Image (cartoon, rainbow, N blue to C red; front, side, top):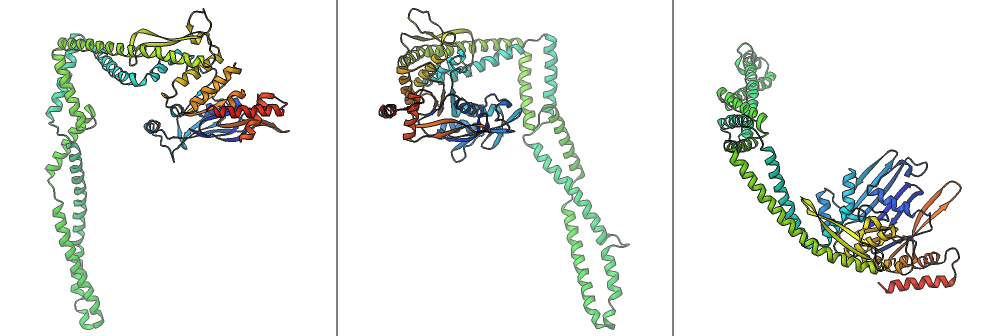
Amino acid sequence: MLENLHVKNLALIDETEVDFGPGLNILTGETGAGKSILMGSVGLALGGRYTADMLRNGASSGLVELTFSVEDEKIQKKLEKMDIYPEDGQVTLSRKLMEGRSISRINGETVSMSTLKEAAGLLIDIHGQHDSQTLLNRRNHLALLDLYADREVRSVKAEMAEAYRVYQELVKKLEESSMDEESRRRELSLAEFETAEIEEASLVQGEDEELEQTYRRMTESRNITEAVAETYQYTAEDASGNASDCLSRAIRVFQDVPGFDGSAGELYSQLLDVDSLLNDFNRELSEYAKSLEFSEEEFNETEERLNLINHLKAKYGKTVSDILTYCETKKQRIEQLNDYDEYVRDLKEKKERAAAQVEKISSKLHQIRKKNSAVFSKEIRLQMSELNFLDTRLEMRLKDTGHYSANGSDEAEFYLSVNPGEPMRSLADIASGGELSRIMLAVKTVLADAEDTPTLIFDEIDSGISGITADKVSEKLRLIAGSRQVICITHLPQIAAAADVHFLIEKSADKKSVQTRIERLDKESSVKELARMLGGAKVTDTILESAREMKELAKRER
């Protein structure tokens, strides 16, 4: 559900914030008050086209921010697959608008425009009068049918996608299998050389890591040994001036001094202690040096083995496992090349079987769609009749495109006749903007339980209608709002009266600027706004009473 909309420095909006509620949210206001700007700002936050002239005069940047609460586990999982995790159950989509560019963020982290649009598609669906992404685009008609028939088609579509993938792989292999005898011999010779080179190395899984550890230990041991040897040289080995020899000389020279001066005895004792400590150190250093000894031959063998493996890695893979896998692949290829005609025949047979499987599943998918298209169309017609479409016929026609895809071979399109005696024609060719809005409302009503999108926005849903038709549209909006959040901009009191939450959009002006602001109305303020919509500039007590009655009637009909 869309909980909050925050807009700053956009067109006539200085800064405004709207807290939406569950159910049916209605936005009303005078013509030119900024209703379209507010909904346009939502479109911008969802990745709509942006130009610098959309900014408020004098502003260097603008901001549109939408905060959604996400409770549906299916939507949560889909978001998590995109590495988007709700924080305290909320997801915030924002777009900072600057001259010539914009920055999109989700929960404060910068994302690409495609990621923003994908996430938005899971959370909200906007339908306006000229929504070319749904009914005006016949490519979406099949998607609507599959959504309606989801329980029956989902598993079959998954089968179809897998069967088509297998078929395409075989087609690709066959295309790549065309070669003359000379090319076959060259490839065979190279494959045999490569497998021989790898097998001669007798590689063992994981030995590269073990050898690297051994080599590193040997290299470090070698460096330490050199340091130990040099240290021992300074403390014990060099008779011309090592520390031990020098200390012995010092003891001999100083040993008689305590006999002449008793106070020197402590110094002599310390000198003897130093000599003892040095002897202990030299003994332990000698033992440590022995523990570091290793075979030069073993070191060279390890180094040569590592060089061989690294040479093979440079040619066949980053790890020993990759090299062995490459070798197995080449062995299989050698078998194919040694009996190439049989290999190609086998590929052709597999391709034929895969094509038959694709055709079989596609036919099954077509039958399910054909059955459901008739029921789907019937239910839409029923909803349309309740939206004051009189003597209107609508049907969905399925057509075999003649070629397969991961979605089968079907193409679907709605056909419509709005007047008795007129032939059925493509819906996109003959429906007006107002008719499309109501037809889309009928479709949304039928799909109310099938769609996952928790928030629907209807902009200009009331275009070109009034009276009884407006009442019918109001009923449908209330029906959809029973299972999800609906946000609707309207100029008709019949629709506004059904609001669970009612907002008023107003434009105010002073000597310096014009601003749009939005206010959430309480019950009495909502009645007054309905009266304004009913009576215009002059609102009488009678009109106020009619507005109050309209509000109460809508409440009872829920």
